[in-house]
Length: 172
Image (cartoon, rainbow, N blue to C red; front, side, top):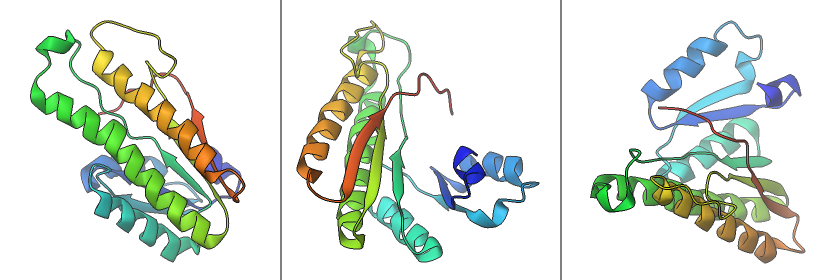
């Protein structure tokens, strides 16, 4: 909404059409609807993120800001009790999904001549340890390292990479 208030054109993505339905309903009355593109995208699948980029660039002409915001947590349990499916979901979403998005955005932004990549940190990114959330924290610490290193790789180019820590955001 803040980007729209500034006159930006915005692509909103979610894991499925169902996950986008609520946002579409909330924005239905908005005079900004013509400046919003909705694209389903499972960030765990690199080809879907590539599709997200290409659909956005085709609609808007370019992508100036790319925000990796997807996050996955596990049940509030000790790490040794967490089921394998949650371990995989956290790694695939929080680490691989962020890396895929950053790779795609960096490559395309370098080709277009400019852009900004923002990765969302979370609990653990600052080395704070909270029991029963260490898998999530581990993934966010990896995100911090990756983003700092990506920023170094992009030094001297017209593409910036950075981290934001907005606090807790509860989603489905």
